[in-house]
Image (cartoon, rainbow, N blue to C red; front, side, top):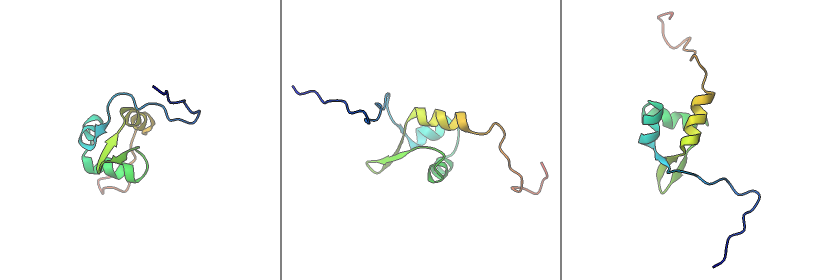
Length: 81
């Protein structure tokens, strides 16, 4: 049996299982539409594999860790809140 030689630039193993779009949205407590928007803006890392979105839990955790503590909604409503 041949063993594959590890290359220096090999990506780290995925670890655990990949999450679906629905599961990723559940983890972040967002809608699937909002998660897709974050992916399109490059704020959440995701891949289409086999025609379906897949996410690593580590990427979702990183998104949460890097999110601002207070979202700025100025200009989103006329309530002045």
